[in-house]
Image (cartoon, rainbow, N blue to C red):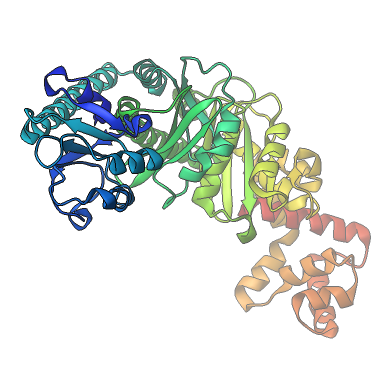
Length: 511
């Protein structure tokens, strides 16, 4: 694309002859300008072919004249002979050869306007050719979208049109698709690390390129409106020309629309799945209706597991981003997944043979010790709420430093959850703690909390009182009241065990 000094020389009707700087005849010409000034550089902006007859030139000053033109970025000099000079002055030729600055001799019979017209026609033809190519590339890529083709099909077409290879990444470096045309030896992970990661951040550079022995690679953000959706990388075994850059430009537009549409569908699916998961975990969706909803969302089979994910402020993830990040990590390891937001974290429903392995991967990739994951019991669809409660209480029962908690950590919670019947648990809590609950409700006392603090402290007064923030004598007084109301001796291990189980059952009921 464009016109060079060599292109003009090859136009036989102009009869132009190179006389100096032959190694630079491949320079592109932006336009032609005529001047007889000794110093025309204030009126030049670079890239021009300067045309002159040299009438104002003193041959001895030719060296300074050439240096000024070269410093101004002039593409070359067309020297018209037959006016003030019969040939290009030797001092100009020597200076131009020394500076690698091209000079062409223009015969007396060739008017400067003929050269200007030749440049204009060539540049106009190039622009028309680019416009036709742009329309052709756009129509070919648009036809793929109209035919419901996916990103991989678009990348294959990009690779064919550009004669190279193409990769499409999401903003976290995950490979979405690749276009094959000599890309077999390309390592996507290396491409991302070296090039694409620079263009994935909001406000990052609009492009990044790399030129080396293997050719040229260019990474361009794929956007829809002002939102970055991914990164397109195109590579070729040689430098990229206007044709390849045009293909990449149109590809980013088409891929941006595809990724935005895919994100909209994914977001809608996530909301639907999250709503169903939330209703099931809360007990609002059950029985045949739960089976039907889960089947429509792609969940079937005997082993579904709920993962509960907790991330503190240090985890750097609010609920929404934590759920999205969990979906990304789990999506690379299992095809069937649903996520929902929760206070302080998220929950995920998965169908996988080893949910503990999934939980470990979540812990590694999301928090490095700052995210904890509870793994529920594998259940059929109708047991989904039970799996959720198991995951929730496994986190509560497991030691604080444990990153992955499972049903093995449930302890007494597991025994109580196994009852599977809310009426049974309610009856048990009522029979044991009923008098304390009623006393607290009618008199504003804190007997239940006091009993719980005392039992958690192992039947010791000082730490129990410290946990409540009261004096030990206050706790003794409350415990005497509780003994009388419960008709049990809380100083005995047997009495404390029964009350402790009732407190755990009440905790499950509150959840």
